[in-house]
Image (tube, rainbow, N blue to C red; front, side, top):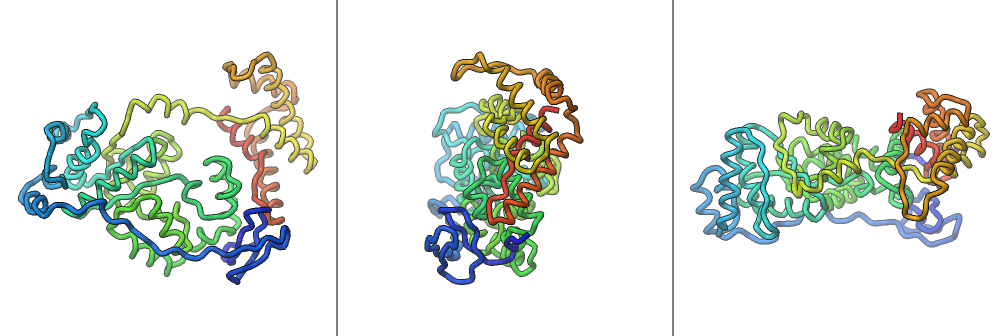
Length: 399
C-alpha cells in the first residue's frame, strides 16, 4: 500500500482532506482542484512581562529575604501580606493549607512569592493546577514579573490536541482521547514529521537554546514548534524537567495516567512536588469527569459498519449486541432524561446476546480491526480514524 512518509514535506487540503506531497510554495489538490498555499514558518516570539518593575522595588527587594524578595510590586496589600505570612509559616511546619479570598485580592502572586523560596530551598517543583487556560496564563504573567527580580523558570501545559501541528489531528480529532489515538498511530508509522524532528540532534540543540531558563506560555511553545517544525507537545514534555513552576489543568495531577506521564517527564515523584490547586471547589466535578467514559450510539453504528466492511463476523456480533442492549435499556427514556446503567449487568446482557465472552481476547480483536482500519485509511491519504478502536478503549474502562 502507498502512503506518505513522516519526513516528507506535504500540504493538507482543508476542503477534501487529501494529503498532498509537495515541495513548492503553491500546489493544487489533485482530488478537488482547490489551490493550496503552503504555510510559512513563523518567527518565534516570547512575550515580555506585561509591565516593568519599578526600580525602587528592585532595590528594596534585593535587601530582603524569603517571600518578600520575590514579590514584584511596590505596594503589598494587607491581605496579600497575611496570605504570604500564613503560607510561609505553614510551609515550615509541612502542613497543607486552604486560602479563601475574593477575586482581585492578588492570590496568584501571593502564593507564588511565598512558595518559590521553599521550592528552591528543598529542591522541589511547583505544580500550579488551574481550571482554565486563562488562569494558567495568569500564572505565567506573574512569573515573568518575578523573573525581573529572581532567576525563575516556568511553563504552562496544554493537551496534545491543542498543541498538535499535524493537519490530520487538527481537522479530524474529535476529542483528546481520539487525538491521542491518532497520534500514537502516526508516530508508530513514522508519519508525523514534527515527531520525527524531535529526535534530530540539530533541532534539539536549537530547542534547548530557545527554551533555556525561559518562562513560556503554551501558545509560545506552539510558536516554537511551528518555527522549528517540531511537535510542541513533545517540546513541552522535554523542557518541564528544567522548569521550577508548571502551570497545568487538573487533569495533569488527578488523572492517574496523565499524572504518571507528567512525573516521568519531570523525573520526580509526588514527594518532590509542591502542589497548588486554584479554585479547589471544582475538584469534585473534575473527579467525576475523570472517572467517566462515554460512547455514543453513533460510534457503535459506525464500528458495526467497519466490522461489516472488513467481514469480521464475530466482532460484528459483539458490536451489534452492544448497540441492541443499549437501545433496549434506554427505549423508555425521554429526551434529556438519564438512567444509571450497571456496567457489569450491561456486559452480561451483551455477552448473552452475542454468545461470546467479553475479555482481553475480545478487546484485542477489536484493537486489531481498529489498527487495520486506520492503516487502510492512511494508505488512502485519509485520516486514520477507527470507531472500533473507540469501542475497544471504552470496554477497557468497563472491565
